[in-house]
Amino acid sequence: MRHIAIPDSHDIFVLGDRPADDEYEPLPYGLTLDDAVIVRAYEVERGDLVVAEFRDPVKGKRLACHIPGPFRAEPHTFANCPCDGCVECDDVDAWTLADHSRLADVAIRFYCLAPAQDVLGGREPCVMVYRNAPIAVIREDAVERAKAAAPELEPLVGQLATEFRATDGGELETLAYLLRSAVMGGALPDDSHRRAEQMLARIEAVSA
Ligand SMILES: [Zn+2]
Ligand SMILES: [Zn+2]
Image: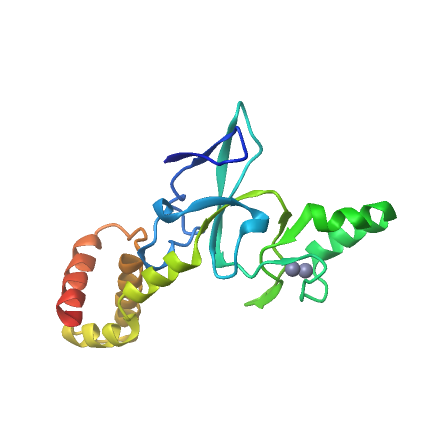
């Protein structure tokens, strides 16, 4: 848990641990929240990993609201959104249409951290936030450094499967899953830590 002050606010930002819940993906490449900084939405840069937003202040404290699937930012103004219509953008349009004098406010109020995209089973809308909203991000250079240092997993999974004599697809999937979780620094299912540690020791031996 970190308590963080930022230059232009009297509030204290409380960045607690990510929930250990299946819904919350582990941060990639072994990154942790210690790598995160807090900036205003308009200061988020392309390639930053967006990890948390913050609730409204209560007695000067603003608690982190962790983002279940952290994403690389592709920030832009509302006017420059490439999404071609999504529920978030439609909401902003409706807000503007209700009172045309608001049109001038749009650029001041809203900022989009990533455009809408098609995902498995539907369409994720734009990530629209207040322009001034505090956002916890891991800067692009830190993400890229961690990525470069992370072991290449796919060839290793095959190699380790042979070494651990995985005999069927299910076992192979389990191996791959354990490896990824371990390398990503995520939670492991009960009783699998020893096995994951063995595999990690092998990874180190193989990649040395
Ligand atoms: Zn949109
Ligand atoms: Zn957008």
